[in-house]
Image 1 (cartoon, rainbow over the protein chains, first blue to last red):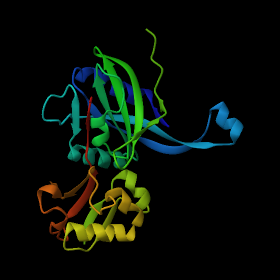
Image 2 (tube, helix red, strand yellow):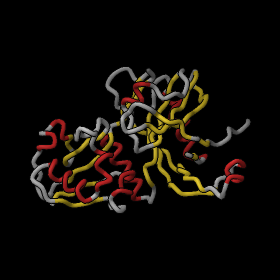
Image 3 (cartoon, one colour):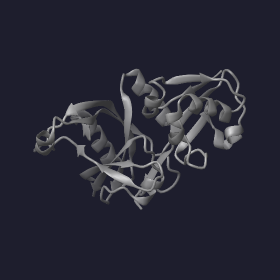
Image 4 (spheres, chains in turn yellow, brown):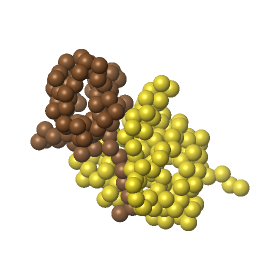
Length: 160
Length: 92
C-alpha cells in the first residue's frame, strides 16, 4: 500500500497540471513502515500488519524525452541519482516514480511497462483537459512483462 | 578498491550499506565481487542469461558504461561505480 501526504500530493498534481498537455515525471520520497491493518476483513482474520509506503515529499523532475512529450517521458538517470542522494541525506527513501497521462486514463501502458523498474512504485496521474482526474499505482515485475496494481491512498479533494 | 554506490531499494541486500568497496580491474570484476558477497543482489541486476537487466544502468563516475567498454571498462581505485535504474514511459 502506498499513501501520499497532502503536501506531496499537491506538488504532484500541480506539476502534472502545469506540464499539461505534456507528460510530467518526478520522484516520490518517504518512509516504509509496517502498520496494523485497518480493514475489517483483515482485522477479523488476524492481527495483520501491512507494509505502508508513506510519501512525504514529491520531487518534480525534468522530462528528458527527446521528442514529442505529449505521450512520452524519460527520466535522466543522473537526476534520479541526485534525488536518491538527497533523499538519503534527509533520512528519506526514494520509494516511487510518478508521471502523468494527459487526456488518458491512469493505466500502466506497454511503453510504461517496457521502461519500468521493479524497485519502485509507479503512480500514474490522469489529467483530463488540464485538470487532475484520477490516479493509480503499479508494481512492475523484473521481466517488465506485468505490473501489479497497488493500493493507493491520496488525500480527499477539498471542497471549495 | 573501487567504490560501488547502491540505490536505496537494493540496500536490503547489502546489510543496509549504501556504499561498498571491491578490488577489480574492470567494472565486471567489481560487480562480481559485489554479487559474490551479496548473492541476493544478483537476480536484481542480472537476468537468467547473466546479462545486466534492461533497466539497470551502470555508471563509472559520470559515464554510462554502455558508451564505454561495457562490463570490460577498466576501473581504477579512485573510481565510483553507481547503479541507477533507467526509467521512461508513455501513453501507448
